[in-house]
Image (cartoon, rainbow, N blue to C red; front, top):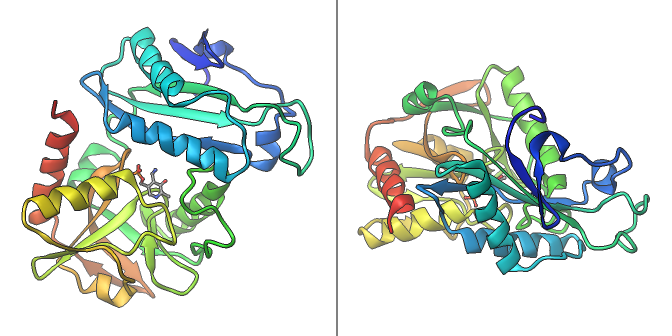
Length: 293
Ligand code: PMP
């Protein structure tokens, strides 16, 4: 990913892509002292941009990472990067991390975090487009979402992704595309990098997001569906058995947008879901919403 043309914003400057480097003794590399955002620009406008910027700042605060930028500077940097690279539809990655001033398990004296923004167009579809249209398959994995006392669950912090990467690797080793992660008590949580919804008997359900990231896409889909008359339940726990009895299942996230789930394997048994019903309408409505002016 380091060898390409283009520009990355680094601490107030546009730097050629190949020159945007950091030292090996960067604190973030050893202790995960890093936070990031994943957002999408559609037709030159970043969907819910300010909310992503605000979340980046909240994530930093949650892990004791002092920031040198505020919302306005983050906004400016993101649009500057889109313009410098000539992108109108792109995935945008804003991030901040503790540098190489000091090593050790200690949040003090690192100085303000470095702040950077990169963007790329090769995630036009996060999943392979054919696979995405057909619906993806998930498997429940051993790795679980930990209790909120153990992790900053509402922060998009690099450290949180260690369990996501392990969960996805477990799923891949079992031949599935992605992981269905349960929480530490065995309730349905989310996939490795997206929230999960299901449709059953005309009702839309998504687990209460107090044990994992309450995604902006999750919030958008809930709001959009309520506006168009759906009954939505988003404030309760969901058991794997309830999810597996659903008519349709889909994932939501800034990167995955609304992606149908075709199959879930749980305790050795596979369950199939419809991928051409209401989920498609919701995906289309989301695609329209992100480009609405
Ligand atoms: N959960 C996890 C673990 C994620 O990485 C993401 C993607 N940021 C989401 C949920 C969805 O969040 P959002 O809709 O804000 O992109």
